[in-house]
Image 1 (cartoon, rainbow, N blue to C red):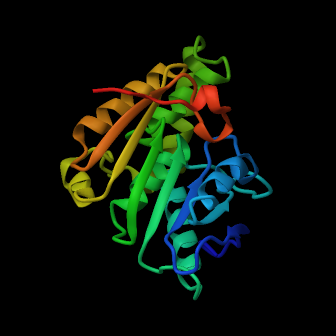
Image 2: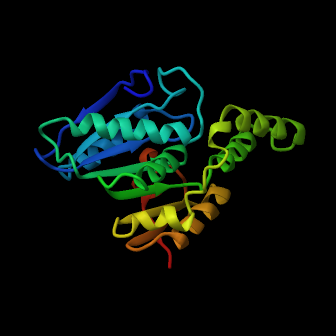
Amino acid sequence: MNGGKVREGLFFPGFRGAPTIVLCHGYGSSKGELLTLVSALQDHQYNVFVFDFAAHGANDGITSFGYREADEARAAIDTVAQRTDVDPASFGLWGYNLGAYAALREAESDKRVRALVLDSAYDKPEQMVKVGVEQQGLGGFPLMARSAQLSFDFLNRQYRGELPLSNSKRMSTLEGVPKLFISAADDPELGDITRQLYLKAPEPKDQAQLGHGNFANMGDEDSAPTKTA
């Protein structure tokens, strides 16, 4: 339940009392695309939970590119933490673009999050609005791009004073939480932002580069990471 809206999710049990990994899908995706990753995590005895954000899967609504989705991620953690077969104080979050922003924003204010994997993350939702416009082939039409940005700003005006995730006060809350930042060669704009987030993040942290974004949908050859200094 989040903001009066019911969200359906799937819980995959691992070892009883083990930590739970919550998977946060990307923009235009859904929980169904994460099932391969679910199986890999279950093989390591983790509990796994997947769900769809607003405006994704069978859910109605309008995406906020991470603002409200972070609250949905917290609602998912709250729900799973009520189970008697999980560790209620130990969660990991994996996210891709939209999901990575939501995961990072949630983790900065939730001590139950003990590990993060952030694939093609961004610092503020406005950056993803720009990427989304370009992916739809509208980047060459300045008026369309500006209209999309203005509409987003109006719909999310309550977040006007929101600080970027890389703000030092926000990032400092993640000291001691292991973090893996993944950038994709086929998405250079988000890749650059992800690397900047890595540089500003406190330890412990690591980074890797993949040929393609969205690790969950790749085969073994595509998903072999290249660690970067």
